[in-house]
Amino acid sequence: MRALVAWADDTSTNLGVRALAQGTAALVGRTFPGAAVDFQNFGKGAAPMRVGRVRSLARERVTGRAGLLEWLRGYDMVLDTRSGDSFADIYGLRRLARMTAFAELATEAGVPVVLAPQTIGPFSSRRGRALARWTLRRATTVLARDGESARCAQGLGRPVDALTTDVVFALPVPEVERTRDVVLNVSGLLWRPSPHVDAAAYRRTVEDLLGALAAADRRVTLLAHVLDSPLPDNDVPVVRALAQAHEGVELVVPADLAEVREVVASARVVVGSRMHACLNALSVGTPAVPLAYSRKFGPLLADLRWDRVVDLRTAQDPVGDVMAHLGSDDLDDDAARSLEIARAALAPAVAALRALG
Image 1: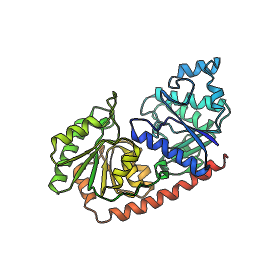
Image 2: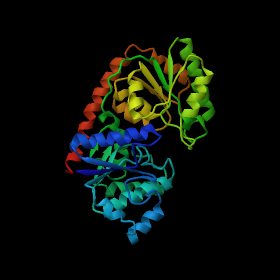
Image 3: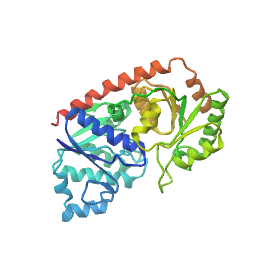
Image 4: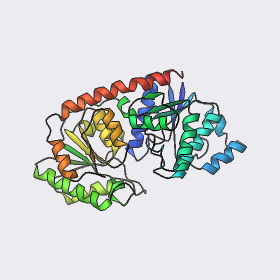
């Protein structure tokens, strides 16, 4: 078995993307022991050409000059992750079209295309819905990581083949002692103006939360989950500045995904603005309080019966809500229950993939 994981890679500065890549590979390995897995993301990967432009893909479809179709035929399946949450039009139609074009080439090459466990939707534009219907119709297998995504696919005319959960729960759990108290992940994406939440309000929330944690005598570790790069969407400058401004706060800029998982496993609780910072925590048995900013958080966590979520778009007192969750006596028991649910939820995905083998 030789599989290609598309739109994720294990070297990305975004450790959520690494979790998606390694988790998908782990799911394939669980289904087909000994399988070989390659990764292909924007601008990097195993492909013989860059795959991030619709025009280049259309030209290759006609000329075959780079040998992309022949290269795709060397795989037994393509697992199309859509970066976990990009099978939607919230990031613009260009991104959706690029990913759709690559999936179409794989289908034309005769390779089964699996929509790997991911968020499906929302699609608010007519063209977005049209591209979504086409993708769903052409996919060999469709996996959704939450019930709302499954309902979205159903509404677009293609029921999913399996309802599962996030692939991060397929990753091995590090064995470390709990030596940290509160690990706080602050998002560089939300720190700057974005369509997700009001940046000024987010900054106030983070500062007020740090003050509330200090007043409660909680020990805080600031964690970057998107590493430093020329791109503005990284957490490192933000957490470094906060660590300098708040005495006694530990700062962790991890080297890789394995270190992140060790850090969150060492914590009593994680408060995270990046969804995979929270999912990494829950997948190792550590309670997490997400500071949610989009639809991808709520439905997935609700399916795991994890309701310790603070939605930054609607919460009237987000700091008070976080502190209330941190004061609960049931955090550890609830996290253990959700982890058991998540592990069981991987079984339908394994069965759906196995049916292709």
